[in-house]
Image (tube, rainbow, N blue to C red; front, top):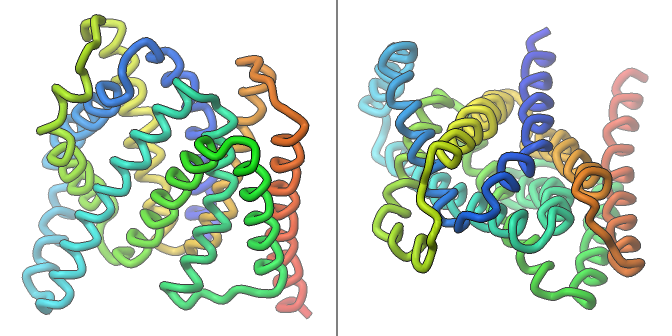
Length: 300
């Protein structure tokens, strides 16, 4: 039952994120930097309002634990909290830009690639085991990237940047799994807002549309429904699930994105890109098969 809670939290988070192109497309006329700036600002204001009312005990426990921690532990907390905020900023900005100015397929591909990259980073940085099936899946993913790169190098670079930034974010949060996730999320978004604040005029340069009720209404939906709630669920799942397991659940997100891209937003693809997408889906199947086999071996 305990594990079911964490699996459920991870699944719900990625289902929500699967529908994120809707609010982002609704703001396509606005600069990506402006969308990100107000998304983070709104999320921070909401969290700063919620935390003292409903999470006062968690805040006290977190800072009490830090007070008793060693210097090395404090440095680790500060380093990975700041790094997490920076990685979220990069990931969100590039993803918003890609969805609104390139296509949903490029953003979706990045989150198909991200789980494989997360598993690889888990192996390299956290000593999480990889089996032969996983190595084959990684090789096929690299082949898929090579195919996309020969057709559209810039799109591939965007996909890699989105995938790498979120994969590293998941790893950093796995390292901080002993701390309250809402406190961490609040601190990370404060870091994100601090990083963006000095550059707001640059983000908004040359833009003629003002921020109106429509803009702030969609931003509020984006901040609460597609930022705070799924991020908290995702971080909560990470307290018990391995980063590689979260990586598998992450496939829910891009699959929903792809369905929407072709059926709702009527995006088109080429045979070359279709073959690359087929390869990445094949790597997904191979990656999942190793978990089924692992369970069978354990039960035997």
